[in-house]
Image (cartoon, rainbow, N blue to C red):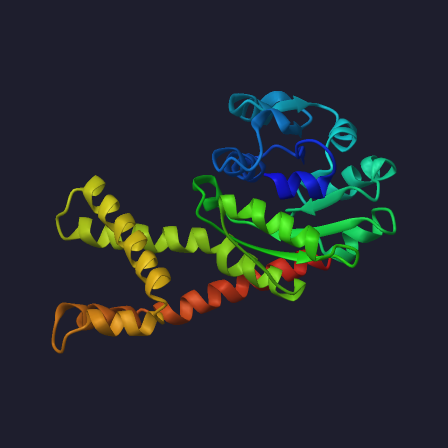
Length: 278
């Protein structure tokens, strides 16, 4: 990726991950599969080998030293648990230079907090990913810190698009994204499970019911994306007067599905905001 390499300095782009959990692995896997970054140019750190083995399987370099990542990579993703991140940043802050681009994927850690813990002119961005990044179908948003410019944002966005959809937003929208899309994966799984269990109740084998439910969600999502339709329009297209769908929709309304889904996003967003304030 010539532009990325040019942005990061001479030679190939080297990407570091401080923290090697599932999200870090998903992002690294996306970069490698899309040909954005070579596996040998990715360096990941973690306290133990428990997660590093997944990076090793991808062909990446690994270490137990967070400082080694900063010494060898100019684009660094911080993918630790939120409560661990302040300690990690304090450890690596002396090694941060004007050339580094630092990206946090830790939920609930604000840009202002990140900038307080790093040198005054550090270029910092915040990314909110979700688990489907593991299959290159993530829904991500990113926000810039005070010293991160458009070139850093474009570089990061170009890389992250290897993992799905990525949009730049004001930081105020990041916690909402956590409620909608980060937590939303679990909400969609709960709905898929409920759809399948309805079919099982009516006599369909479980495996078949779950496969059809998942494919129904996938197909519907593709139609919404490709056609640019509002969900209400597609829902109306499926309904016929006196048909099966309108009877089913009535049952969903009686069960309060719409209000429950809205409340779930609200509750998850409020919790994300609580965490950001801590």
